[in-house]
Figure 1 (cartoon, rainbow, N blue to C red):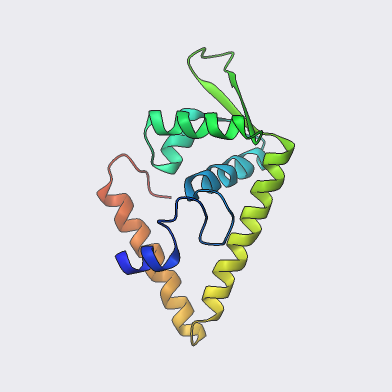
Figure 2 (figure 1 turned 135 degrees about the vertical axis):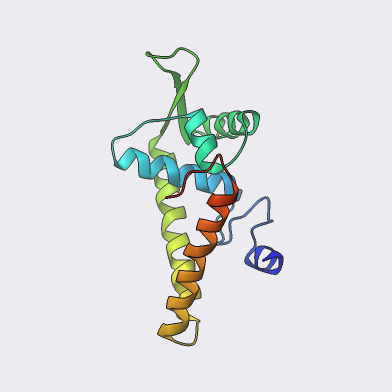
Length: 144
């Protein structure tokens, strides 16, 4: 597992494994906000932090960085003045779409490099099982 994390590039602070020059957490935040926005949903900092598995102070710094870069806006929730609602800006949406596309291309490339359909199916099933095991050992994370 550690070799995969290192070789896939998950430890790089300034680039995603698909080659986008932003941190992996920034990329994941953009894509989550994009997906939720496409469903007509708004996210709070708290919800984003929970989805990313990062704490309150780290999500606040990440959101502030996204806002400074012009990729997201934050506004206080009318129903809960403590909550900050997040939304992508037009440049943020375009970057999120590029990240999402590059990520899909990278994973398609990896799956295509596997030797057979049976191997691909086995890898995908193993990833599902691993995600389930992770969720079951993290009581704060709900299985999907």
